[in-house]
Image 1 (cartoon, rainbow, N blue to C red):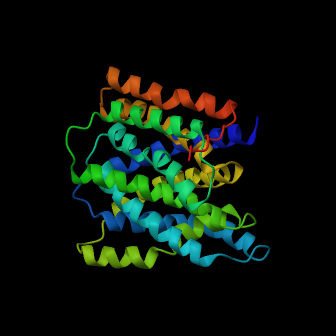
Image 2 (cartoon, rainbow, N blue to C red):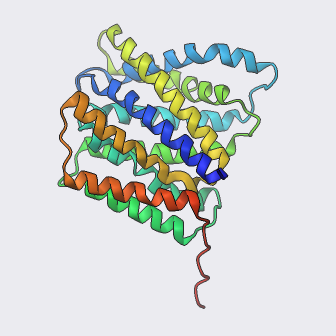
Image 3 (tube, helix red, strand yellow):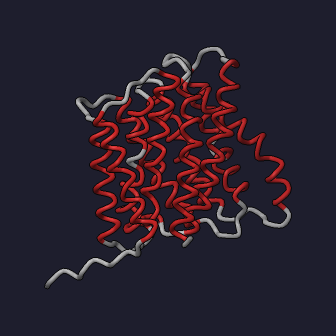
Length: 285
């Protein structure tokens, strides 16, 4: 299997895990404090990753701290928006909007990372976008939907910023800094949010954090294996798992438009994994 195929495989597995993390967030009530929950997630991530960090610290001292700091705060904002979206939207609907991230990554990868544009990348992004629209069937724009789009943007930028982190940086360090460096910011927001601390949120936060770290780690590996715009559409495959979990745990009923949209999302992945991108023709002058 070539590098693109391996990268796609990692993203498919990662997104399956991420949906279970989303399900643990969705069990929260919309009225529960968002920033407290996010802080609990960050704290649990720090505890889980600390042994790995200490093991790798001596061999690989931390580098590129400024990029870790930027990614940490973008990630924290995205997680806060994710909690808002998941507690107010159906699981499949929220995930359909989250999976606008690969679509956003195509132009962002060209702009920020200097990756070459190709017909295959453009067509894959367009077909995936059509699939998202078919699944979503948007009838109105509300704050929860805007929050979900904000999650997609934060994911796209964060994944592209992985390229700014040296390859020798251990994945455990990358995940640790992503969660920990923004903790003062989230703790300040939790204090501003007010109210008593709801410690019963610790366990779903812990489970969600553990699962999302697996997802983030797989993303780090995947986007180091291949160009972001070549494998980004693999992020869409988690939508199938979101539909299944929505039916199983939350009594959401998928319809024909949802299945058709999923086909539009997944089929381009086969061509992306097997084929090679052909550059766009130069425009006539």
